[in-house]
Amino acid sequence: RVKLARKPQRKGGAIMRHQLTKEQLRTMLTRKLSTAIGDREAEEKVAEINLETMLDLNANQFRRRVEATIIRLSTRAQLDRRKKRDTHKRQTKREQIGNAK
Image (cartoon, rainbow, N blue to C red):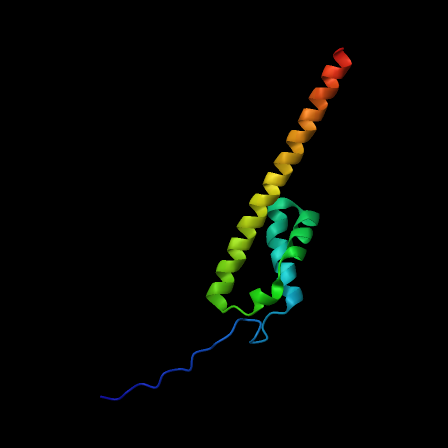
């Protein structure tokens, strides 16, 4: 029985293999997020993320982290927007009451 030679395991993330730069990662995340929450908000949210740690992950972990980040940020942004809308509603209601007096 002949033992088959194993391929060496590729370690390190796409960044370590020089396939993705920090700027590319930033643009990728902002593009994915901007569909959910809008361009300017997406840029602000991505600015808060530590991109270095994401670049050290291997491919599967990286993919998982990207998805999780997008889900987390989009839900948080939606909550923020809802809160903003609710406060605005409350203000307009208060003004209507004030005008009625």
